[in-house]
Amino acid sequence: MYNGRMQEKKSTIKDMILPAVILGILVLLKELLCRFDSMDEVYVYTLSRAVATGMVPYRDFNMVMPPLFFHFLALPLLLSRTVLMMRIVNSIFLTFMMLLIYRICRQKTGDEAALLLSIAGIAALDIATYNTMFCVFAMIAYILLSRIESGRYVFILGIVTTLSALSRQTSGTLLLIACLVIVGILAPKGKKFKNIIVYLLGVGLICTIFLIYLLATGSFSQFWEYCLFAVLFTDGNSTIAASGIPGVVITILGVIADIKLYRKDSNKEHIFHIVTGVLIFTAAIPIVDLMHTSYAGIWFMIPLFEVFVPHLAKMMNKRMWIYLDVAASVICLMITFFSFRGAVFTNDVRELKYVPLSSSFEAYKDIAYINTLYQEQGYDVVTISNEAALISLINEEYNPPYDLFLKGNLGMTDPMVYVEEACSSPNTVILITDDYQESCWEAPEGVYDYVTSHCHPVNSYAQFVWYLPD
Image (tube, rainbow, N blue to C red):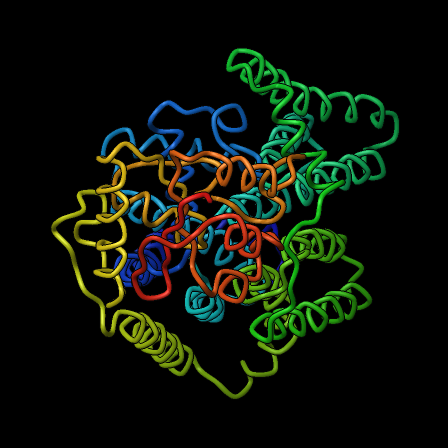
């Protein structure tokens, strides 16, 4: 194992330039060439776009996530409110995350193996979300934990862990508490109380700024409803997908590898790595799929590399590692171009220009156009569908709560309250798909049955049906 401190002195900006270029190109191509057909990406853009247009989270629109990531993305959208701009910014953000992985792994395995892991990580990553931001702050916290002998770094650690909680409230709060405990345990004799106070000052600084934000925007009570009470007391989304199993397996093997390494050299950084990784894995609770487990999977590949690379180094020279890096880059590019296959482009929707779209996009344009026709006749159109946000985006609208009408994202309000209100208004047209419940596992139950039993159909397009109240 490399000595962490000695290796860190060699990690100059010059050393990071070539990896940054390689990883940046691979990430940028993957972000720009993937089709805009993931509803998770639509939701990310929709919420960030709402903030960019002056709407206030929780007060003006519903979401269960903390607001930091969406405010972060809203800033560049002030310059250009387009999906292309969001993807460019996300490319920079994801590249930064992979450079953190590279830096941490480089100290333990050397350059070529660290680059191989980082490239493989890009192939496994999906879109950037608030979970990505939490993971970035968790990785920074891990780096800071090795420097907590200095009060300055303890203060910064308090800031970073609090920002992680404002990215993902559950995992971030656990990280904040875990780091507080570690600071207390590992503080030098006579400095425990001082270090805890310094850490809490960092926490308090960010909390104070955030409290001022909530009070100034009039969203204080709504924030607690959506981000705390709704998480604890309402039915949320949960699933276990086969795509998430590799991440779970790698996490278990990575923990075992970290324990093996700790027993070998008693380096506390292995304990920090386990704690950080387990908390990163909580981003996959309660949705265990590729998107949510990939972060922990990438993180726990580091100790696996640390265990096996020394054995491989006996059989491989530097040139062979470079060949592996090139092969991994080619595979990553093949995955990228495969996701681009069959994509179409549009010039009619300003916010989607230059973005690859699925071949079914024209159908959504037709549906959005029909909605516009009803609005021109004086009707309010309520779209209850997993694709509602995409349809609103085409018309350059945002329609809360229906554009994020998912279990767990509606605060303490029963979803049926909104449905009953829509179906009781004679001036409202309700658009819903005839496969509503089957097409989205996050859809609130009972909505389709209520609409079809209290309204009559007046128009249809493929699986989409427009209803008027009886």
